[in-house]
Image 1 (spheres, rainbow, N blue to C red):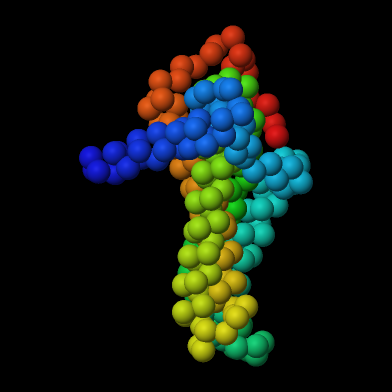
Image 2 (cartoon, rainbow, N blue to C red; image 1 turned 60 degrees about the vertical axis):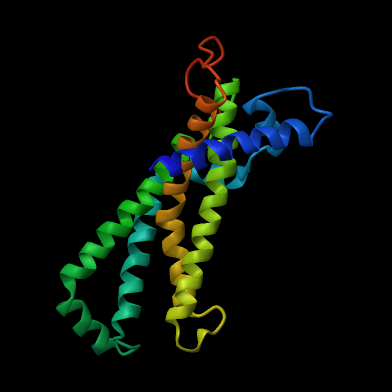
Length: 212
């Protein structure tokens, strides 16, 4: 546990040193320097979709459908109507559980995005949202999607490109990995601010942080 904390602290300090000494033309110091240097991913068009009315419900329903479809593919009932009907009757409880699990994941994805996809106003918020969520969190999410797709390729017979299980692995990693990564980025940004001694600024941090 101690080595994990040391590694976390070292990553924060390394990012600070890189941006402080690697970009000498910038005069700022601290997490806001890193945030401005890196900028963070904006994804403004995705953000607009995530903030549309009923986006949480729509994403939950789509994710639930994806979960059921993945189970049908894994169950191997084939394309036969009779085979699918038999599978639905025999595995109704399992299908309902998958639909609920994936539906919850879809709702959590949108909820986490709306909560954490923000821009910083103060040094502390720049560290948490610009550097933590929209940089570190996105990097972790992309890594999880690549890992999920790679595991799917290994599960496919022959490991063909764009095989069904590869796409399934990427989609599952997106639904569940993205919200986890955003929260992890939020935590990492808070830890960076703590390690570097950045204090909150109540005069600037009034209300919720602004949207992207």
